Length: 386
Image (cartoon, rainbow, N blue to C red; front, side, top):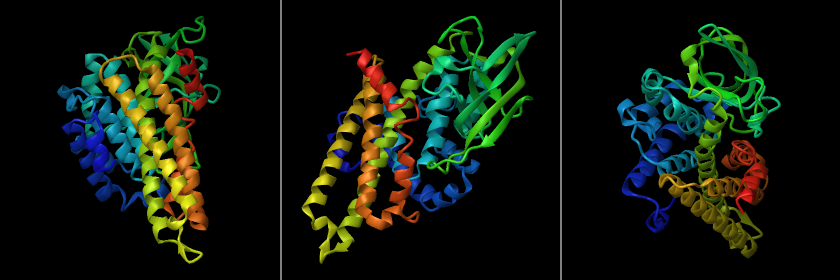
């Protein structure tokens, strides 16, 4: 976000601007020089989480009594935009799953004892979290999940498989959705559980190889007679579906911010290329058709950002914003893929080379219309409220 855009935004307070600047400095100093290595290794090193914890980045929305800052949804989208501007979507995804997609389940629905046990480590970066909802046959259709948790004595026995789980390979704590009432249909009878990495019966089935987001680790998780204590239940029994739907709003907001931040960075990189690349005796930027197409893309990104910030503002005010969040997720993700496509085109052959950051941005962008609720699902949410 440029200084002019900051001045014109009615949504940003001083604390948001300070956060943005601090995260931007961190990305420049600690991510850009080594991000390519993380892409090759397939994960973000643990010391990076710890460093971000020391800087206060991992507890932006979490309670102050555990080390958090108790900021609002606008802070989350500022944070997500700046992480995405790094051009390393996998890095941004790993961090945001930890801060805004997984750990909020604990903050919102955990008991005092559960929060006291885990939140300090989550905020400091000593504990890395994941959320396991998606299954081989249940993605956006959360009500169709098959993983089962059966009460057994003074605890639970968990069986099932989860797939496409970010931070699933190297994470420490997983919040798992499972069906606890076999007689209930659809969304009823689903509960959330806290599962620690070393729990017997819990294993990583395989590390998944992805087209993009390569610096984030992604796993298929297996639960085979995984025994959990009674206090592993997170929130009320059989109310997990509603917790998942509630948290989806925050997840979709930060994914929208990832899209707008990534699109803005793609445009910046491409502008620099167009202004120095010569063709037919002049720079590509001198071609009016290219200038106009870039201007149109910039307008779309600006529109996506305003919609996203408005949705975050509504959330910060405690107002119902399912429609606006769904609009933002659908629109910003599609804008991101359109920006990435044209930016690769304007780079010509270099846009297809892995040494070019625009090639990585294009690969990373493709998952945004899928993850966290596919575009088609988001548009249905909007249609229901028309």
